[in-house]
Image (cartoon, rainbow, N blue to C red; front, side, top):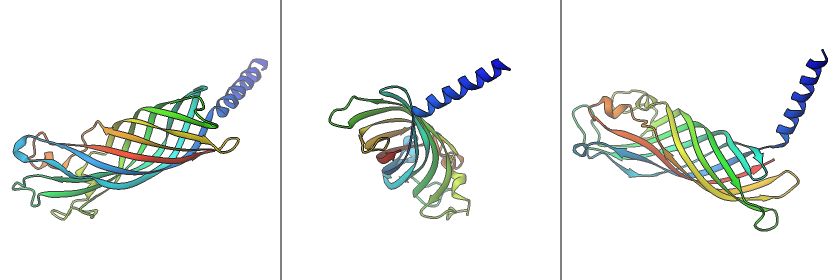
Length: 218
C-alpha cells in the first residue's frame, strides 16, 4: 500500500512539474498558399496563381530546457492555388482554382535565445507537420462542375510537410507572452487523386505556404 501511495505521489509531482513547463496559447496565421504542380511536359501542367488564406488554432510549447521546447498544437490551415493544363478527352476545362482546408498537428523543435532586449526573445522553429483534408472547393464550388463529383474526392486526404520559421516573443505579464513570426511550409506528399485518374500519368500536386504567425500564450 505504501509503495502504491509513493508511486501516486511521485506521479502527481512529476505531472505538476511537467505542467509548469507547458505554455498554451492561440495563434492567427494569414498566409499565401500555392500548389507545386509537376507532370510530364506534354500535359503543360503548371501552377498559375497563389491563394491568400487565413488559419489558426491552438499552440502548445512543452519545454525540456530553459531555451528549448517541443512545439505542437492543433490548427486549421487554408491551402490551394490555381493550376493549368492541356485538356484531354476526359477533362473539359483547362484551369482549376483549388481551395483546400486542413486540420494539422505541428511536430517541431523551438529554440529560444536569451533576452535580446528587456523581456524579448527570438525563436527559431524547425520540424514538420501532419494533417488531413477537411474541406475542398474547385472554382468556388463544393462539387466539380464537370461530372458533379464532390470536390474532396479529387484529393488525397493525408498530407505532410516540412516546417521552418523564426520570430520574436515578448513577455507582457507574469505568464502572458505575445509573439509574431514568419513560417515556411513545404509539402512533401502528393495530394492529387483527380488528374492521375483522368489520364495525366505522373502528375503530382504538393502544397506550399508562407504564413505570418501572430499569437498569444497564457
